[in-house]
Each structure stands twice: as structure tokens, then as C-alpha cells.
Length: 153
Image (cartoon, one colour):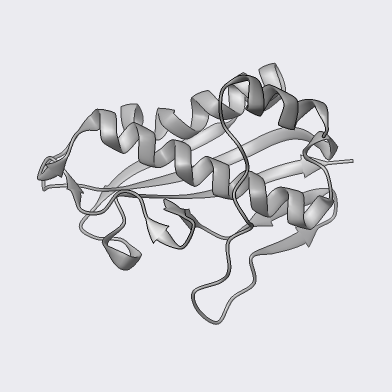
């Protein structure tokens, strides 16, 4: 177990199996020293953990937890691509999408579920540029989807 996974376990969390693409795309692509990951939703053991819109069935707090599950799935994809989470030198960018009711303005607080976890695991290197957008729907009616780019060695 590498140091990042040890930090994850200290938080009471564990990596799920790497996500399987739900369509005609790759789970990740390499671009020089960057790894561009496909979007991940909050699936755990093949089951969607959070479904529906924030503001109608989901709260900011449950959306935060959904974003955290998305981050765990992204970390699993990183490990599948790189072999070790320790190879990540920087989390560069997180695009966060929140399935929310019209006019919802707290997308940043929801996507903090992913951002906070990356910062807890990687410290300053886990801080990243980000977009947090409310949308009318996501695949499988997921509450949150994130898409991440990291730099690695």
C-alpha cells in the first residue's frame, strides 16, 4: 500500500474497483506527463450511491458525499492507469457537474466533496483549478459527475 492509500485508509476510506466505461470511450488518456481521466459518477459496487437532483431529493450535504464517491472512483482510475497513486505530482483540474434544480447556486459547495479529498490526500499538490456547474441531468440520473486531469512522474 502506498502512502496516498494509507492516508485514504486513515480517513476510513478505500479504493473501489476502477470504473468501467459506460460507452464508446476510454477511461483515461495520456498526454505527455498529464493523465486526462474520463468523467466518473458516484457508483460503488455497481450501484449508484446518489441519484437525482440537488434541491429535489438530494441536499448540498448529500451532493458533497456524492462528489467524494466520484473522487474515489477517479482515484481508482488513476491507480489503474499509473499503478500507484504516489505517481501523481499535481491534481491540475477538476470539472464538476451537479445535477440540480433550476437556479441552484451552491455547486461549488457540492464539488468541494471531491476537492477536499484531493487536498487531504495530496496536500498542496492536490489543490487544483476547477469548474463547478449545475446541470439539468447527468448519466443514470447521477447527482454528481467529475472529470479530472493530473500530472504524474
